[in-house]
Image (tube, rainbow, N blue to C red; front, side, top):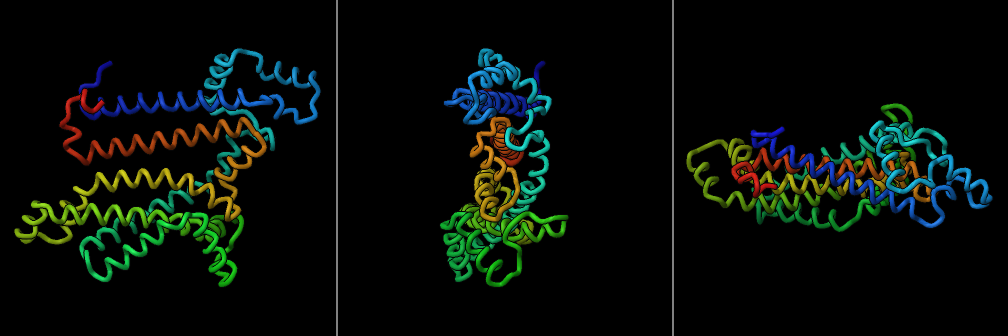
Amino acid sequence: MTFRHPVLQFTARRLLAAALVVLAVSALTFSFIHLAPGGPEQTIAGRFATPEQLEGIRDSYGLDDPLPAQYADYLVHAVRLDFGNSISTREPVVTAMQDRLGVTAPLILGSFVLICILGTGLGTLAAYRKGSGLDRFLVGVAVTGASAPAFATAIILVFVFGVQLGWFPTFGDGEGLADRARHLVLPVIALTLVGVASMLKITRARVAQVLQEDHVTFARARGLRPSYIVGRSVLRNAGIQVVTQSGVILLALVAGGVLVEVTFGLNGVGALFIKAIEARDIPVIQAVSLLITLFIVLVNLAVDLLYFALDPRVRAQPAGARA
């Protein structure tokens, strides 16, 4: 089957590349886990298992089969979203991940939305007021925010707003929608502060550059409304860099979210992953690793498609040049 439309060709190539990346990463993760000293059977049976018990586990789980055959069986079950049961808790891995996504998803997505709105808005404002006191203040705040890692900011927020002022809870993810929202306020702020700093800097730099270009000068000379110039000329031309930074920030939020979840005692996917590594809970490690890989691949795919939509030069390139 051939795709003649440029958008379909571009999307098909990116989807194929994404699928290959997921397969490669899942194969490496599977191999490293199963080739680690001790083997999965030692993790399942415990430190004091007898050789007979270990042999029985290997036979039950098919661990004596060649590694490619084990990986093929893992892929068949993974496509069905069947990752087995957790070694530590004995609950289905998919159920454990679904429960914890209810904490992680609002944390990551809420922070990302705030970062995009505040970072882009403040960066554009700083670029329009370049050289002013407001610009210097915003740049100073951005530098300070970017210098502090999310977990350090989280500790400060816990001490000030949780311990000293008592405005927000400092531990756990709460019960019910309203209580969970209160528990997520400080974690979201901790992640947002670092991301806003990064987004503000890149937006300010790119918007300030676009404001010096001829098409913006001509638009002003024609008497077009400032809001129209910002929306149609400035932000559209600065969009490529902003989209790139958005993708980078979203991926960074995943790593930062793990530390923030541990700091605030949130029972999210990141905390689940850390506990699984400590307990050598192989089914959970494999499932969360695959979830993270899929997330990274999908974010990069979305960024590529936004490139295609925003930049006419990408659409104008020959098919071979874009591959």
